Amino acid sequence: MSFGGFCKSFIRCQSVNPSLVARQIVFLQDTTHMQYQKFFLLITLSALLMACADQPLRDPVVVSSDPGKTVYETKACNACHSSDGTTLSGPSFLNLFGSQVALADGTTVTADEAYLKESITNPSAKIVKGFPNVMPSYVFSDADFAAFIAYIKTLKAP
Ligand code: HEC
Image (cartoon, rainbow, N blue to C red; front, side, top):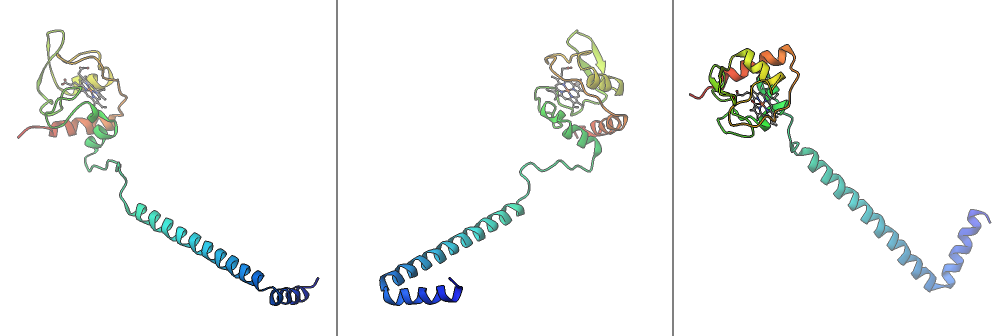
């Protein structure tokens, strides 16, 4: 059947059968309704997405202007070492540089660059008194090490 012919018989059929017309109108309304629902769902979802995109990341990447502080934070030293005197799993870095550190073997060592470097690359070599030997060893580039030393020197209580 041609399209025109189909249309003609469709219209004829509808004019003789009012209940069919009614059903078709309901069907048409229903599909329109569903289309609107989908449309609004889409709008809601995109609004939600846009709102989320506006939020800052929950864990912002640490961006510090101090490269040594960045080393301290990105290598997660701050999980065990505070910079404000608080004792976490490890001793605080506040006032550490140049201080006398009491070790578990009863000796004392000056916290100079060599000691700090050894403490980082070979933490088991000298254990700070009162702390467990749990620190993992790290590989620092010369630049990281220099930055870290410069940073730790700034950690002095006023
Ligand atoms: C899992 C916890 C942990 C992490 C992470 C950690 N440390 Fe330690 N660190 C310790 C503990 C505990 C000690 C004390 C025991 C010892 O001497 O090994 C210590 C000791 C030190 C010391 C000697 C401190 C003192 O008072 O004499 C330095 C320096 C140090 N850590 C640097 C670092 C640096 C730098 C990082 C990051 C690259 C780091 N640590 C990461 C636990 C940790």
